[in-house]
Image (cartoon, rainbow, N blue to C red):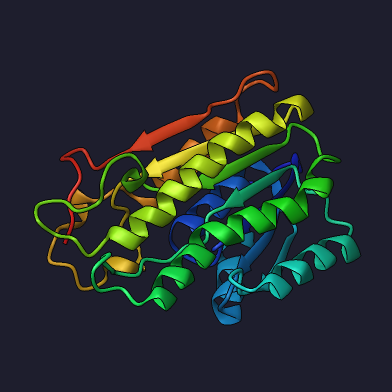
Length: 245
């Protein structure tokens, strides 16, 4: 079924997993899309699948968000294509195992660059364009491990990942305060374990995970509230509770 166009959204990490599910939901709502991810072939495949049965326009940009120059290029791409986003979905991120005792500083720097620094700099660059949109929203994908200490059940290899997600939580709350005066809502989603490619090979049944599509439904709910309302934070967990392997 064809949908009327309601706006434009940028989705990082938009080629697979949570980002892909969010992009699919946004397209079904009538949002034109700019999908950003490192793998150009995956981006093309995702765009082909999403575009079936819809009139939305889908732009693609292969981009390594850990690199400042790539984010600068993303901004220039938006300017050249006259893309004025109404929604920015900060989703791209990685998991790197590591503890305070054993992690080389380069691994700490890498995960902080991808998971936290990239969101900060991308939002900073895109903000002047976002302010020209309507019913603007910044949606940040964090993790339940920004809500508590990561080492669970004696497993300690998630420390540096948790640090990056705590940083994202603190920044997104500050961003919410910054953007109020511009009537731009900031919403942060804290998912537990979501069944994506990163869990390939797990012995746990799929029923123990959140479906990526459920994250997309939460994004829809955020965007379907009235302009004077913002859903600030949402926590999603597997119904059986958190777990760690």
